[in-house]
Image (cartoon, protein in one colour):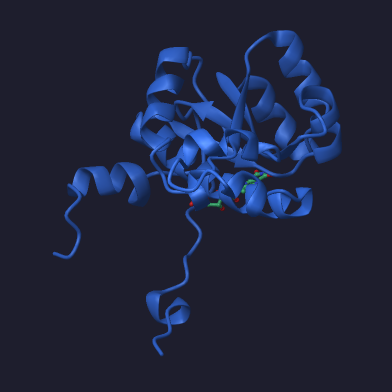
Length: 196
Ligand SMILES: Cc1cc2nc3c(=O)[nH]c(=O)nc-3n(C[C@H](O)[C@H](O)[C@H](O)COP(=O)(O)O)c2cc1C
């Protein structure tokens, strides 16, 4: 046994966790989202820059505005999920760096003074945090349905601003009827790992 994590937790987070396409009506509360965030905020990012930003789409009016920017095949689930979150990268994350990385506060200007450098770094590190967030949703006993089939520029203009780049939209809730497709295969260890 090489893994120290309880096998039930391994199942909850990975083996039995699935990408949900339908959901029950059970609400997802702000308390649940806060508990998820307060867990996954400890996931590592470069210089502790933590560029992920989360927009919870709760009101029916906002939900309708979002659905219009989703690809056709993603609209029904985005309309009916108990909670939908827009995950984005803050390209101005460096403003918080002196506080977030006190060991080297000069990083704000010395490393991240140029916007293109920040955009590349925010994209990578916010994507990492998006993955932590999905696993956190599972840790709360909920299912996530991440989606990138959407009009990114439309979502950015509708909900964000020039300093934020949308990464994905995530449906969150308890799985409903016929919630998932058959499990697709994964690449094996030998196909993925090389040792030099
Ligand atoms: C970043 C990302 C984007 C995705 N975009 C979509 C999407 O636009 N529409 C959709 O139906 N599924 C989307 N998926 C779902 C994937 O197809 C699904 O997570 C993958 O096949 C694994 O499914 P499983 O968790 O049930 O094994 C996306 C997943 C991720 C992680």
